[in-house]
Length: 339
Image 1 (tube, rainbow, N blue to C red):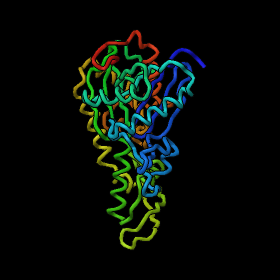
Image 2 (cartoon, rainbow, N blue to C red):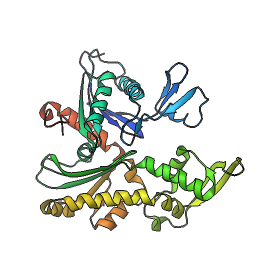
Image 3 (cartoon, helix red, strand yellow):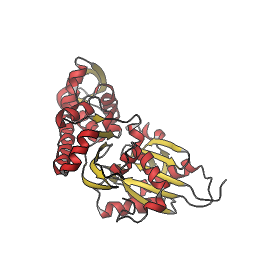
Image 4 (cartoon, helix red, strand yellow):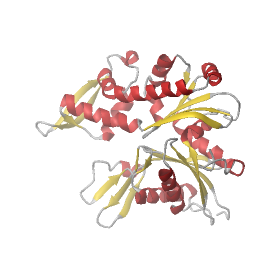
């Protein structure tokens, strides 16, 4: 047991929650899902266990994803989820409440900011701070944003894609769009239903995306996978075979939205910083950046070298933790208290 409060960084993502504890690194990585008993309003399961219940619960139990498009959709459920994860990460070792830093998308409103901060405080934080996701992602990817050089980050998460150009410790220009891994899954569900008359869940769609999803299908021509679901006409279970090309068609609109947003930020970038980005390239982070061929497509469309760090999924959590370690230096820089 220790008598001081822990310093905890939380990547409060739409798809998953990562928790970083000072001096320990990432100690928790679980899905952002909570299972609740409707009759008693009691939390049945949180995280990985709750995710296994998605689409498989009886009438009185509902599995909820309390965050949508990068922001809180179910405040009370988010508070309970955060409280559970903070308690699990600290293992109740501290007598003093922890200081918590939470990352948020760059395009959130002041109301959404306040909701995240209040949820962290209600979940047991002594002090709560916020940091923008692209800044945290850049720090986690090892970019020194304090230099007078331009750096570009593209963070594709579950609910949002955040794109930013940074220099001298601040964001020069940025854009946040509510397109991410979840939108890919939803698009696959719609496509399978429309063209194959097969009803599948988002979990199945996510598995298909990971297996044969591609933003650059030329490199995976001919690959296929089987999908099991319920036939829309007969109502009976059915198995179909889909190809990489078909899944690419399903998610093309979302991929093009991301590419267009990247180009828009580049168009707004000052010329001096543009030359820096030409030399340094674009750094991609987040789970969505791992979609096969995403980096190749962006490199082809922009003409800029594009890189994905070794641990792209954890960059935001690691960067938030690094910022939290320097909280006393960074505190009070602007309205978001850090960046």
